[in-house]
Length: 116
Image (cartoon, rainbow, N blue to C red):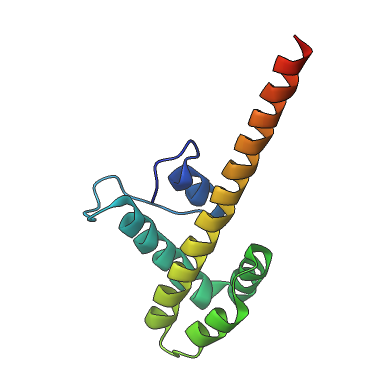
């Protein structure tokens, strides 16, 4: 993940209700988030499938990739594939919001400097 002004970890933890143990051994932040997402997706697969489907729909996850993930059949494999899809899409959306905010900030500064 890139270091930007948004805090992807806290946003994902809140949005997906993730439990990310501080002492969990992971090579990097992205792997830590993937593991937490996988656990959450696996839980939703087994206990609240409708909530998972609705979340994927709201996220606007790629339909073909999602269908391929569900085609894997084994819940662990499905959860693994979906966690990658979810993380990639969430990060893409966060980056887009961040870039739009930067553009708005720059255009606001240009307007203010032109008024002086």
